[in-house]
Length: 162
Image 1 (spheres, one colour):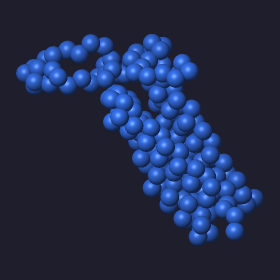
Image 2 (image 1 turned 30 degrees about the horizontal axis):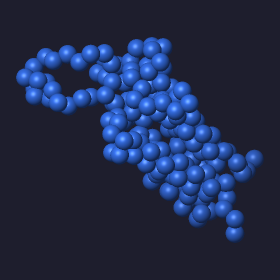
Image 3 (image 1 turned 45 degrees about the vertical axis):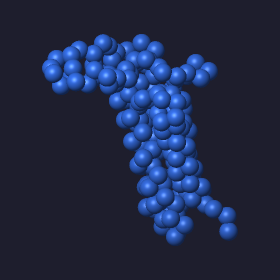
């Protein structure tokens, strides 16, 4: 028995999310590139996609295509939102617009608590720590999230009854 489009889409969303998170954690733990606050926010959709994608797979596998379709549509929307956040972040890195003050510009010490954290460096959202083929990690994340959104949309809309 061949897998349905919903099953395949679900597994692709899970696999893509696992790979995206694995790459993020690799860059953080092995390469030593600490994530900025916007980078951490971009991981949320992938964390959610793993259990929800597995749920969609098992629902589709048990002939409950309606709920599976709803989950795939929700995951598609989550990936579109993630792509939007990644594009916003990439635009900050390219200086197209300003980012949140919490992670751009020079840090300002305002109390003794902050002076105790002098050794801790919060990465800035407006500096790309790594680029490949001109795209930063935020840029690559935008492409990955858009691709996964398309997969989720295809799984949610293919094979619908009229």
